[in-house]
View 1 (spheres, rainbow, N blue to C red):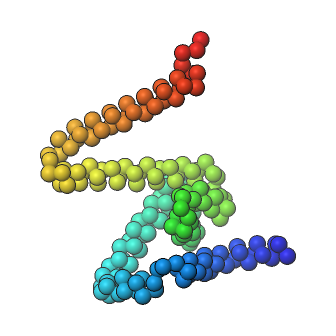
View 2 (cartoon, one colour; view 1 turned 180 degrees about the horizontal axis):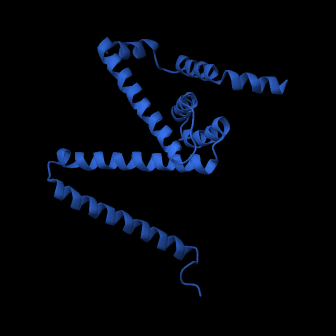
View 3 (spheres, one colour; view 1 turned 90 degrees about the horizontal axis):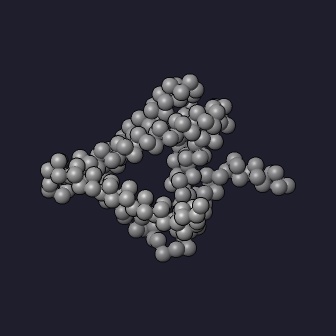
Length: 185
């Protein structure tokens, strides 16, 4: 009996998730009319542009994963990459933590039989590249927002980075000192 329940949940987890969301919305103060009126503010062409941008971003992300896996010597079928991408997106957005990252690593191992080390390396490269890209975009936007020159923004970022590194050093020293790592011979 328990195995049949587990099989049902495994087969229909997305349906169960949407039912749970519908119940939460039904028993909370969120009105469906408010949700609908917010969505109906968008014109059809605006909604179409959002869909196009979403599919372009998704395509670029899937293509980058395919390239990274090929470079790491673990080619993957496109169908499975799409499945893994949308499954991890569902895990990202339906949980309060970034559970999609370890879930992606697990799915690469389970579906494509890619070693955990290779899929972890691919995910870490993805995270490093996306974080660096966001940092570069922020670096380019800081002067425009603050109305300062790029050189001045660069020096502010160096000072901010030095302060951050100093804060980490002080915290590590304090932690080590309080736990008896420093000062004992």
